[in-house]
Length: 263
Ligand code: CIR
View 1 (cartoon, helix red, strand yellow):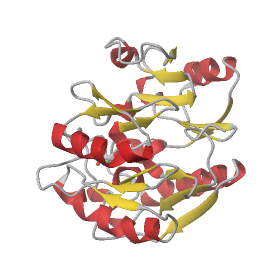
View 2 (tube, protein in one colour):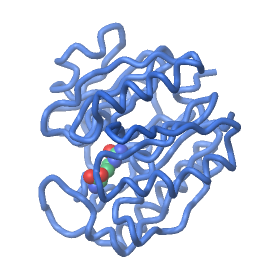
View 3 (cartoon, helix red, strand yellow):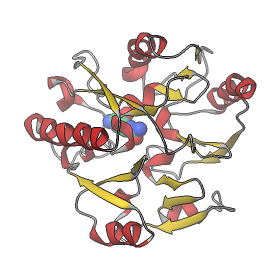
View 4 (cartoon, helix red, strand yellow):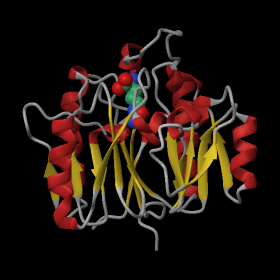
């Protein structure tokens, strides 16, 4: 069974009213909370359709970006690693997530170095390795600490580069199956996916690169028909979910959940 695409559980957190202060690279408008909540309900329902037991956490007003739970932890079959987000306003989100992971996992370890920063959005777990993109949020010290923490669990970390101007490594790619990665051309052109099959995101649809494969379903943002058809043509069952409001604050499908089978 593939631990990188098959999961029993997901953790999500409902967006808070403070979401209007969420971080963004470019201001394209204020997210509409009611609309975002509708999208979030559809997202959680689709995870359940895929077979997930979903742990739905309440909003955290103190952390505008806390709906993006993926950045707080890395969940592996052997245990979970609590991250140290590189965005100062998000640092405290990791400690908020830790007790929920401890309730589910036998082993929970933490990135602790004062100079170590790493966010889950920069981490792509495949069946053979863990790729971590160095970015404005994830630095070499954070990657080195993660490498040390997961080595005893038998995982190998490979450092790659998140393209300049792109928030996270997984903003531009996602795992479709053990050997297949959906990627923007600007990222795959770096050669970081050599040895994998790559499905290209259609020209002009770069925002469709962040999807999630959860058991038999691929969850992707609505509004990217060429990429949807390319994924479906490769044999995957696609579910489209509205993402217009999260997109205003640079969030997508993967950011909205932690996906795992507790170990
Ligand atoms: C941030 O800038 O941190 C949030 N507004 C978006 C985080 C998206 N998370 C992710 O890609 N994993």
